[in-house]
Image 1 (cartoon, rainbow, N blue to C red):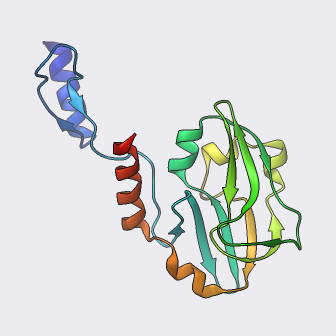
Image 2: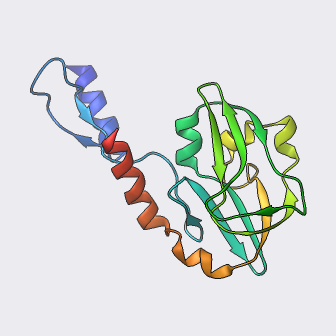
Amino acid sequence: MALRMWASSTANALKLSSSASKSHLLPAFSISRCFSSVLEGLKYANSHEWVKHEGSVATIGISDHAQDHLGEVVFVELPEEKTSVTKEKNFGAVESVKATSEIISPISGEVIEVNTKLADSPGLINSSPYEDGWMIKVKPSNPAELESLMGPTEYTKFCEEEDAAH
């Protein structure tokens, strides 16, 4: 009983919904919100990359939601500077302990900088996906492509629906 009271108060503190189990086989709590962080001021692709557009530069990385599903990142393959990336085309790969996944460019443009820290510390993608774990900086060739990406509210809903389907 004490454990159930502690769990209930912890769930309330974490703003999780608590529901009584109808069966001893069901979990006592239903987690109905995504624990991944989704930041304001970024745009998101349905392939789980994010874009931060500032002036003539767009920084690209993978979302917290994506890195959470990947697990521990052990290797990152990124393009060279001065190469082009194309919207909805592969520009690299992330290898985790679970799988290798392609990184899809959310916009088109020229790579002007690559995060070289990821070669020695690929785990930055896990620990800091929106700051230290960024992947490439691009000079967009068609800034209007940014308008087709999701904002934070839409991306959060997209992730919740995607997770519910799995």
